[in-house]
Image (tube, one colour):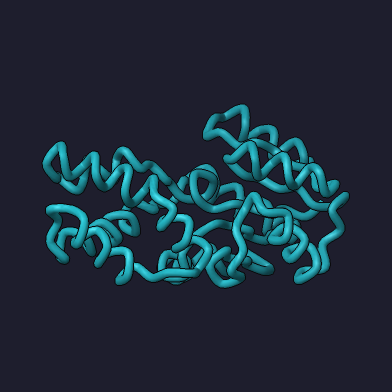
Length: 198
């Protein structure tokens, strides 16, 4: 069995509300960033690789009371918030020691992916597919077909770990084994059980 990992909320933290708190903006500015950045189609466009942080920052400045420094700080705080989940990192190492091949399929901007690629554990992955670099995004079926083809993965021998139910559903429709991931001891044990790890 081969492991296919999502990153956000699976390997690294993704907590939009914590990000908003760290920005220390006014209530109005916080609501704006919540809806017009993190909850806006532009965020998906960043993940798809069809826009840039600079372009999105310009829109934020034009449409809100944010300065350019404040708008750009949003992206810096997002990156700083992508801290490792210790149990996941431990599991990556355990799988590597067991000789299990591990791949990544993640929705993420190219800038954020480059930021994470500096981390030592990225050397544990046999292949990494980032949505922005493919101009495709989960849960679109094409990105799943692309990852299977690119890395020559057999769906029946692939175990996909992701925190999004729509992503899980599409993976399963292609015959990929999949686990809807929640950060809980039981969920980590389910992954270990799937790979027959103690």
